[in-house]
Length: 216
Ligand code: DX5
Ligand code: ZN
Image 1: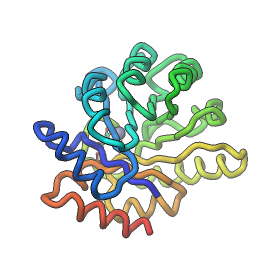
Image 2: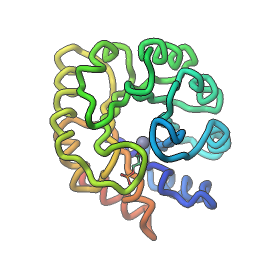
Image 3: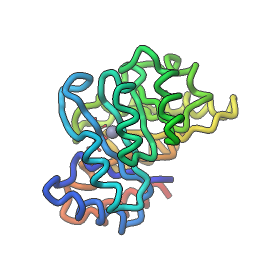
């Protein structure tokens, strides 16, 4: 099981410190939420922030693009040092093409769907992606409540992988705390994004330990 702390809830004035804290705690991925104020109502980071983070950590940079026309920015994020770039199926008219663009840059490609989007909408790309991200809240903000209806979608995603022999990891994002992490693990998730649960604490390392215990 892999943990992917989301820096959305970190203290941006002390970003390097907050990244070091989770790296020292032994997590696998660093989740970077890119928002453009169009696909989602919020605005966060661009490629220059990813480039600034790249030399200060060995963590896998897991870049979640919540932006319209991701095809226009994929190369910039790849050059900035992203290891995984994940695009919303709802954000582009040419999902195959964007996934191919990401992989042509030598970066792992993920596809992500909003809570209201059925797994069937990405069925045609499941054979090519390295990661499927199931949103367990509506994207845009940290600190929202987990939507339990998404557990069935995680189970479907796992069943399709087992039946078809696909290779993707299954990641969940939104409202992840020890209880919901455990539910998602039992449904088939492999990678767990957590923002507010980890960073809205005086001792993030303790929160990571609690998540790891729940995932044991
Ligand atoms: C939401 C982002 C998440 C967010 C999760 O749009 O994609 O990655 O940081 O935050 P929490 O863990 O607080 O729900
Ligand atoms: Zn995210």
